[in-house]
Length: 203
Image 1 (cartoon, one colour):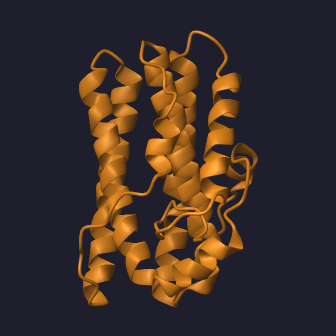
Image 2 (tube, rainbow, N blue to C red; image 1 turned 60 degrees about the vertical axis):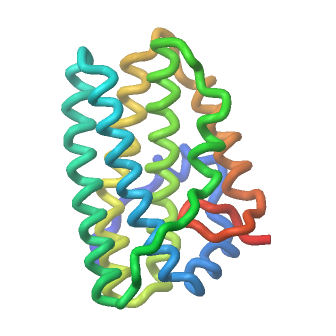
Image 3 (cartoon, rainbow, N blue to C red; image 1 turned 90 degrees about the horizontal axis):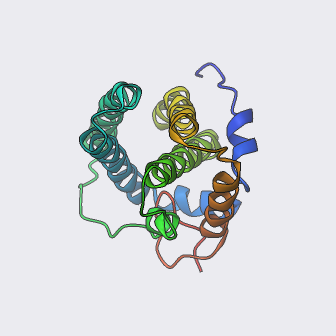
């Protein structure tokens, strides 16, 4: 068993817990969970690289996002390795509505666009961390150890995004965090028609 990671800040940040119904479906759909987890790691690395390309003048952001992208790609490699061992074919899956739903209402002008992007990144990382911790106790030993091993890096990514959002904002970010917390809560609690790593409970 991996050493426990304190997720207090993540639970305080998120406006709701993952519904138990999602965990039940995740256990029934472990192949899809792993495939979509791999997709999430790719998307997280891509988001970090896009920020590096877009904001070349922000040194702190470049350093944090470079490290984050490398870690996310390493996690991607680990997920596809587990999939290969288990005979799970890496097939194309449609995206969850989660990330797109969070991006609705994003600011279109700077620096607010960057701040919103970073806050959304913080929510995605925080929710991923919370879900790894919630589903891990119910998984087989290999997958449980792997998911628990991700908690430290995912919680650090959450804090990196949040600190950068405050750094580059011209005002306190509390109102924007509250705005996205409510959007994120609605996406997590409202029913979905397809199971994904960041989906709500199924209809």
